[in-house]
Length: 127
Image 1 (spheres, helix red, strand yellow):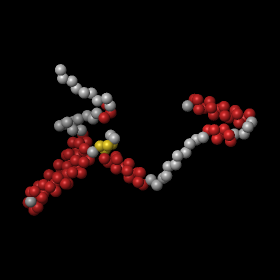
Image 2: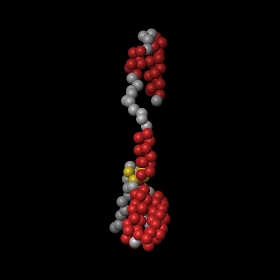
Image 3: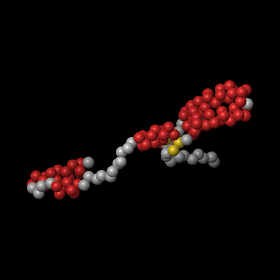
């Protein structure tokens, strides 16, 4: 009896369009062919077939990389954009807490201060 394994995480399943390739892969492979094949045709007479073929492969490699590379569900260009954003930001993020006990200590020891503390407690419970 034949069976098919069903992935547990359905968010990683991608719809295939043709030749068991996704739309992104088809687009990148098509772009590689659109750039590589004319390059080979126009340079094979002047450079020779073997040199022209090797150069065609090197020209097509970035398109193949863009089609196939994916890390943590993100394509390469999204990873690259996030990396550029990270490198441009010169912020130093410091760890900072909101100490409620210190706020309570700073309140005056009066009935109004106690009422404010009770109101803060009620607000926290509503959240």
